[in-house]
Amino acid sequence: MSTFRTGLLLATLFLSACSMPIFKDLQNSKIETTPAQNTVNTEQEAAPSKTPAGETATVETSVITETSNNNAAKANITKSNADLVEQLNAQKKLANANLTELKNRTGNAPDLPKIVANDKMSEKELNTGIQLLRSYVSKTNTALAMLNSRVSDREKVAMNGDLIRIFLTEATITHDKATFKAQPLVGQWVRGESRVIRLKDNILFENPKSEDLHITFSETYQLVVNGQVISTVNPKREKNNASFNVITSDNHGTIVGKLDYRMVDK
Image (cartoon, rainbow, N blue to C red):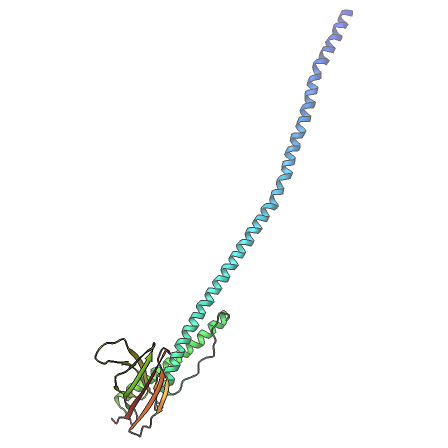
């Protein structure tokens, strides 16, 4: 019996000794698991910190894109205004040409719209100016077409004072530091007609020394040379003469001369 108790005691001690390491391993396993979980939690907590940086980058990109778009828009507006200024100047050139021709041939012409073209004008102002000039050009084109029709009728059935014969007796041209005398010329004009004649220093051969001369017999009986009135014609007086000193068409030279004229009965 004593032996049985002793054996039972030894068996109990043996079992206790075997169970101790297992319990310790379980504790170690729990201890090691906790830091791992902490590491995962730390990474998950740190991850959201990337979002603000991403949002900042997106905002900066948006600002750059918006600035680029604004610069492109400003460049387009500037180019658009430059095109409009060019159109305005082109219409103004046409309007001035019509004004000069109509005034020379009829003695009067409607006033030009008062427009000063510059890069500081707004798009609306530029468009308004273009439309005003286009209306003026259209109006004066109509007046010139009607004048041409009257001149054509006078060529067919001329009344007293409708025809004049002009004889250019003298003309000295000074241009580009060169001077030459033109050959005499003669021609016939209808009242309201404007023509260009070519002055040359030798009528038989082509020569670089030449110059255009604009002569107009206006409806108001005025003789106009290169835009300058040189004489008022009396339709009842048969003969007369006039001298002139005018600038060339390019404003870089002068033409000094004399012409005789007389009314033609038909």
